[in-house]
Length: 225
Image 1 (tube, rainbow, N blue to C red):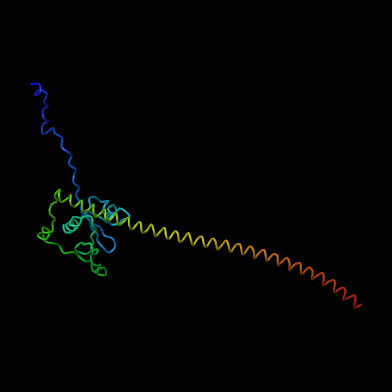
Image 2: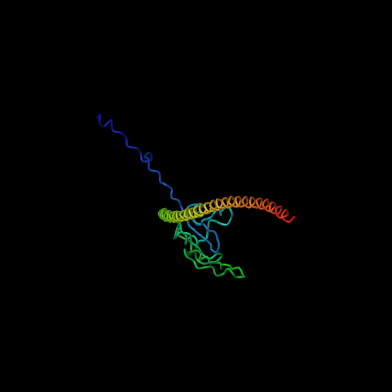
């Protein structure tokens, strides 16, 4: 039949186009030491931890930051992706958001971390990451990153207002200083002008006195003859 002749063959399964599946980014754990604390964070790239740590330079290029392979550190950061975790520098304390203050900085002897047994290390190894877990971790990381960016913008807005208030105060004080200087210069000019007039009067009075004295002294000498 003609209708049957017009039917198009269905595309084969291997020829049908399927939407490309977006690859899932995976988080890695990065670690460094700044000030009194060791820092660690789970992030998708080296750029993210530098921003989260507030580093002004590339700590990875300087050799003071690295990707961590410590199972305990990885487990701690993966449980809170995107959050900067801390522990006292050089200690074997677990990483957390609010660690205790360092207490061993004055120790004369360097502290050595005890070696863990194979069984302990096996218990600490984090489970393999699935695509679903990786996606959840990325979502959590991006959420924390947005919170950090919002906080940064708020702090920058506060600093901007403080700068504006400071600049306004400086401009106001500068204007008052310049006004006072102009008034001072005007008064000095007036005083100098008045002083010149007084000096001229004084000179005229001295000249008048010299002439008068000379005339009177001559009259006195004639009267005495």
